[in-house]
Amino acid sequence: MKWRNESCIGFLFLYKGCEAMKPFLTAMKEVWKLIVLLLLIAITFSYAMFQGGFVSWFLFYSFLPFALYALLLSFYPLKRIEAVRTLSRNESIAGERLKVSITIKRKSVFPLLFFIIEDYSSEKLHGKNGSVKSFQFPGFKRELNWEYEIAELPRGEFVFEAIRIVTGDPLGLIEKERMIPIMDKVLVYPAYEELIYRPSDSRYDQGMAASRERVQRDTSMAVGIREYQPGDRFSWINWKATAKRNDFMTKEFEQRQSHEMYLILDCEENPRFEAAVSFSASFIRAVLHHGAQIGFLSAGKERTAFPVRGGETQLLQLFYHLAKVQDNSLFSIDKVIEAESSNLHKATHLTIVTANITRDLVDKAGSLVLSKKAVTICLVKSKNESLTQQELLLKSAANSRGIKIALVHEGHFSSGLTEVVNLDISK
Image 1 (cartoon, rainbow, N blue to C red):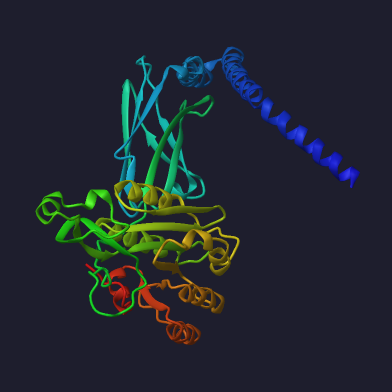
Image 2 (spheres, rainbow, N blue to C red; image 1 turned 30 degrees about the vertical axis):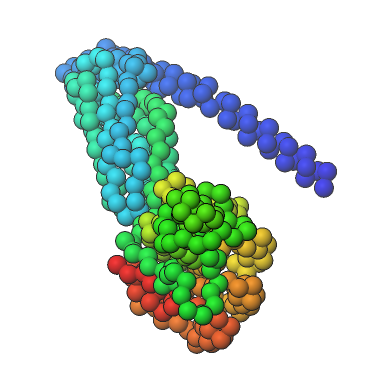
């Protein structure tokens, strides 16, 4: 064991030493190429002097222009070259296009035969190499523009790190390159569908039916007056009616039910995870635009919980989180719900978005129903994918325990929630 630890430490020092030697090795490589170039010039000249004749001198004079150009290029300062990257937008929606424009500026008119321009960014944008290349012919131009387009942006936060410029002579004797660190970021929010949220239970209190929702008074809408009762607020007193009747009278407000949602996103690894994120974004956007409040919990490697709130600020925070969330959860969704039960007590409606329904999830959701919560499980499927026999049995078991199961198909989110009695979402 001691020998293994010493070997690991030795390899670590060797690796760090190699990293520190890189600039020195690069400089030595350039010096070596320059020495080889001078040797080639000397050899061709010696051959012409000693051999004589038309052929030998023709070879020397034919090689001389290329050699002189390579010699001058070896002293050309690439450090004076500037690069600017411009993105068409810094925030986008998944599936949209992104245009990237790169401008190369140099101060001298020294003729350059070619430029290899390489733009480095996240691997998810440009594949395994993490870069996109272009072959350009600058010639005597002082400014060179290059544009490329990323056709379909994936969801996430991506960083453009640097621009690499490579040039050389026609014979490949001298090659020069420069890495220009230029940091740019683009945040890609999840794609969403335009949905209209209409909660069928958000009605004013009428009849004798029991409700899971808390009753609140709408103080912006007075519908009458009544005698003062203990517990009434001082601001509710109607002073005109009090003066007329010589007794304290308070305003009678219309009562309504609160509709607070809480959404839980299952972040276990699954090929349908992107569809689950898109549906969550569509659902959150529809609820908040309706004026209701919603809380959110993502059960990834790092659990992130947002309290039940409304408004545009809540929408921006949730969308920013959904842009970066990953399917890297170490625990199943039922264990996450059990661990986070203390954060769910305020919400009257609980929606669980998952791509995999299990018996443990149904059991855990059933215990939430017993605590007087309306629970909906949104099962995300691919296009035209139907429920398996096992999922049909679990759906029947869930319905018998008062749990609503909504089948949500990718690309058709609005049609998936028509099964849910408590919710009405349509395009």
